[in-house]
Length: 125
Image 1 (cartoon, rainbow, N blue to C red):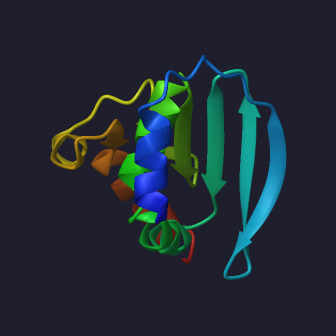
Image 2 (image 1 turned 30 degrees about the vertical axis):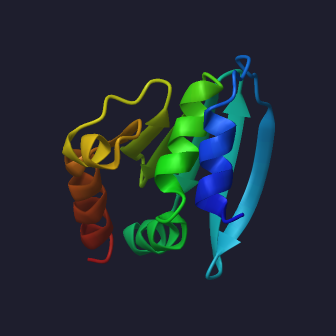
Protein backbone atom coordinates (compact mmCIF):
# COMPACT_ATOMS: atom_id res chain seq x y z
CA UNK A 1 0.00 0.00 0.00
CA UNK A 2 1.42 3.41 -0.89
CA UNK A 3 1.66 6.23 1.66
CA UNK A 4 -1.31 8.20 0.27
CA UNK A 5 -3.69 5.24 0.52
CA UNK A 6 -2.38 4.33 3.98
CA UNK A 7 -2.98 7.88 5.21
CA UNK A 8 -6.47 7.89 3.70
CA UNK A 9 -7.28 4.66 5.54
CA UNK A 10 -6.02 6.10 8.83
CA UNK A 11 -7.97 9.35 8.36
CA UNK A 12 -11.16 7.34 7.84
CA UNK A 13 -10.75 5.68 11.24
CA UNK A 14 -12.45 7.06 14.33
CA UNK A 15 -9.32 8.55 15.88
CA UNK A 16 -9.63 9.71 19.45
CA UNK A 17 -8.21 13.19 20.00
CA UNK A 18 -4.49 12.85 20.59
CA UNK A 19 -2.07 14.83 22.69
CA UNK A 20 1.47 14.99 21.36
CA UNK A 21 4.67 15.84 23.22
CA UNK A 22 7.82 16.37 21.15
CA UNK A 23 10.99 18.39 21.08
CA UNK A 24 13.31 17.39 18.28
CA UNK A 25 15.57 18.66 15.55
CA UNK A 26 15.86 17.23 12.06
CA UNK A 27 18.04 18.15 9.14
CA UNK A 28 17.02 18.97 5.58
CA UNK A 29 20.01 19.35 3.28
CA UNK A 30 22.17 20.31 6.26
CA UNK A 31 19.71 22.90 7.62
CA UNK A 32 18.15 22.33 11.04
CA UNK A 33 14.37 22.12 11.25
CA UNK A 34 12.86 22.01 14.72
CA UNK A 35 9.65 20.30 15.77
CA UNK A 36 8.03 21.12 19.10
CA UNK A 37 4.66 19.83 20.19
CA UNK A 38 2.49 20.16 23.24
CA UNK A 39 -1.07 18.91 23.60
CA UNK A 40 -2.76 19.21 20.22
CA UNK A 41 -0.41 21.67 18.46
CA UNK A 42 2.75 20.80 16.56
CA UNK A 43 5.12 23.61 15.60
CA UNK A 44 7.65 23.13 12.80
CA UNK A 45 10.27 25.87 12.43
CA UNK A 46 12.11 26.10 9.13
CA UNK A 47 15.17 28.38 8.88
CA UNK A 48 14.84 29.56 5.27
CA UNK A 49 12.37 29.80 2.41
CA UNK A 50 14.42 27.46 0.20
CA UNK A 51 14.45 24.83 2.96
CA UNK A 52 10.67 25.17 3.26
CA UNK A 53 10.31 24.72 -0.50
CA UNK A 54 12.46 21.57 -0.33
CA UNK A 55 10.30 20.25 2.49
CA UNK A 56 7.10 20.87 0.50
CA UNK A 57 8.53 19.14 -2.58
CA UNK A 58 9.44 16.09 -0.50
CA UNK A 59 6.03 15.72 1.17
CA UNK A 60 3.64 17.03 -1.47
CA UNK A 61 2.40 13.56 -2.40
CA UNK A 62 1.27 12.81 1.14
CA UNK A 63 0.39 16.34 2.29
CA UNK A 64 -3.41 16.10 1.83
CA UNK A 65 -3.58 12.70 3.54
CA UNK A 66 -1.36 13.81 6.40
CA UNK A 67 -3.53 16.91 6.90
CA UNK A 68 -6.65 14.73 7.04
CA UNK A 69 -5.04 12.43 9.63
CA UNK A 70 -4.05 15.44 11.73
CA UNK A 71 -7.62 16.76 11.60
CA UNK A 72 -9.09 13.34 12.44
CA UNK A 73 -6.84 13.19 15.51
CA UNK A 74 -7.73 16.79 16.47
CA UNK A 75 -4.12 17.90 15.87
CA UNK A 76 -2.88 21.09 14.24
CA UNK A 77 0.52 21.49 12.60
CA UNK A 78 1.85 25.04 12.18
CA UNK A 79 4.82 25.70 9.89
CA UNK A 80 6.89 28.86 10.40
CA UNK A 81 9.66 30.26 8.24
CA UNK A 82 11.71 33.11 9.67
CA UNK A 83 9.11 33.64 12.37
CA UNK A 84 6.14 33.85 10.00
CA UNK A 85 3.34 31.30 9.76
CA UNK A 86 3.33 29.97 6.21
CA UNK A 87 1.06 26.94 6.59
CA UNK A 88 -1.45 25.36 8.95
CA UNK A 89 -2.57 21.76 8.52
CA UNK A 90 -5.15 19.75 10.38
CA UNK A 91 -7.84 20.61 12.89
CA UNK A 92 -7.47 24.41 13.01
CA UNK A 93 -6.67 24.97 9.33
CA UNK A 94 -8.99 27.29 7.45
CA UNK A 95 -8.56 26.02 3.89
CA UNK A 96 -8.27 28.53 1.12
CA UNK A 97 -8.28 27.76 -2.59
CA UNK A 98 -5.47 25.22 -2.36
CA UNK A 99 -7.02 23.39 0.58
CA UNK A 100 -10.38 23.23 -1.16
CA UNK A 101 -8.72 22.00 -4.35
CA UNK A 102 -6.90 19.28 -2.40
CA UNK A 103 -10.08 18.58 -0.39
CA UNK A 104 -7.89 18.70 2.70
CA UNK A 105 -7.52 20.84 5.83
CA UNK A 106 -4.55 22.78 4.47
CA UNK A 107 -4.17 26.55 4.89
CA UNK A 108 -1.35 28.35 3.11
CA UNK A 109 -0.46 31.92 4.04
CA UNK A 110 0.83 33.77 0.99
CA UNK A 111 1.39 36.85 3.19
CA UNK A 112 3.48 34.81 5.62
CA UNK A 113 5.54 33.26 2.82
CA UNK A 114 6.11 36.65 1.17
CA UNK A 115 7.11 38.27 4.46
CA UNK A 116 9.50 35.40 5.20
CA UNK A 117 11.05 35.77 1.73
CA UNK A 118 11.46 39.54 2.17
CA UNK A 119 13.02 39.08 5.62
CA UNK A 120 15.40 36.54 4.17
CA UNK A 121 16.35 38.82 1.28
CA UNK A 122 16.90 41.78 3.59
CA UNK A 123 19.08 39.71 5.92
CA UNK A 124 21.68 39.33 3.16
CA UNK A 125 22.39 43.07 2.99
